[in-house]
Length: 137
Ligand code: HEM
Ligand code: HEM
Figure 1 (cartoon, rainbow, N blue to C red):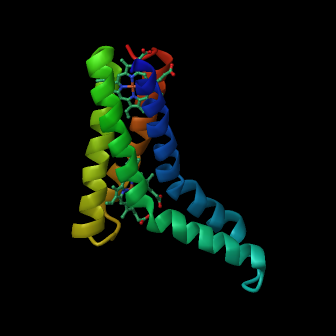
Figure 2: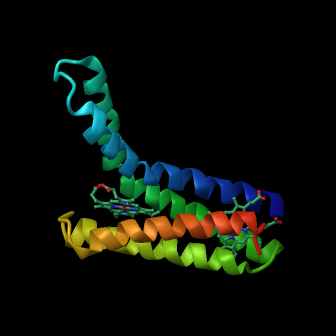
């Protein structure tokens, strides 16, 4: 079962990559794609892709959380309670709550929540790298 735990660990990482794409996809648009001709089929395709990534951002975050729950249950049952894992998980869950607050209560208007949301995303990524490098310790 522990091997399934590791599989779900990698599914969390996959979900997180999809969630985090929100940032680079917009950054690449601003830097290189925005200046292209509006008729360009590449630009139109890119905008479709960007819309998809932004529209489903919260669902990618939710998928990530469900994979996290599964990983957590399996690892606690068949392996051990990981300290670095708990730190990564707490940051991730905190960011989901913050994202929901920004989306539904703040109606996506950028204010402090948005910059904290971005910062916690970076901290979560660092915590997960540590968790994997330390082999779940
Ligand atoms: C965002 C949160 C987390 C992510 C992305 C994550 C990801 C991963 C990944 C990818 C592995 C496999 C590493 C490998 O293949 O060598 C792993 C291993 C492990 N994780 Fe997590 N994890 C998270 C949270 C947690 C939590 C909350 C716990 C437990 C309370 C936990 C417990 C473990 C344990 C015990 C292992 C090692 C299992 C073994 O090697 O037999 N993780 N994690
Ligand atoms: C794994 C959890 C999550 C991570 C790591 C994460 C990360 C991020 C990042 C890095 C940005 C910045 C994008 C930019 O600079 O434009 C962002 C934006 C945003 N996030 Fe999240 N997020 C997560 C979950 C959620 C959830 C669950 C929701 C809503 C229910 C949400 C709502 C938002 C909103 C409204 C924005 C700003 C505007 C937009 O792009 O729509 N996030 N998120």
